[in-house]
Structure formats: structure tokens, C-alpha cells
Image 1 (cartoon, helix red, strand yellow):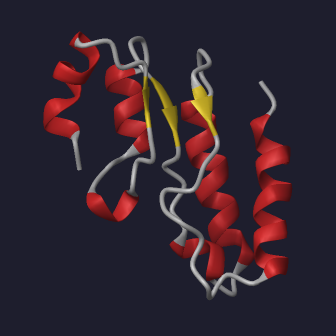
Image 2 (cartoon, rainbow, N blue to C red; image 1 turned 180 degrees about the vertical axis):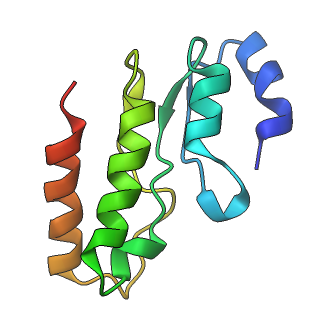
Length: 105
């Protein structure tokens, strides 16, 4: 969690923050609202719902975060961490379908 030093990172010229790990406390929606005029963001999509047997969980994660993160531009999809082994190919394929569905600007 680097929230405390984001102002310093901006002051030295950082223009994109990645990967925004959810379980470390990096909240994409909060960060976009606070720093979206100064930074682009990459990541912030929690990997944990990707393996959930209920596909609506990851759809809600992507839909909700994309709705805020895309406003005004400056968002690149990426998971918040490496994709865990318990995410099947079909589950990750679903993630990519959802990214395509909700990512259009």
C-alpha cells in the first residue's frame, strides 16, 4: 500500500500507478476520485472473485470499477496481482469477455 506517498510520487513525475493490490488496501475507485486528474491507473481488479463459482461476483467487480476508473480516461485493465492457480481457463476467459464488454470508452 503506497497511498501515503502518492503525492510525492506525483511530484517526481510518476504518471501511472500499478498494480493496485486490493487486499493491500489499494482502492481503485478511491484513488481515481482522489488522483484521477494527476495519474493514470493500471490494475485494481481483485483476483479473488475470478475463482468464485458464482460468475456474477467477478462481473460486479469489473463493472463497478470500470464505471468509475474509465471516467475521463487514464485506466488500463490489469488484475491486482498475478492470476492464482485456482482460476480455471474458462473462468479467465470469462474475465477477458467481461473486460471487453465493459472497457469501451
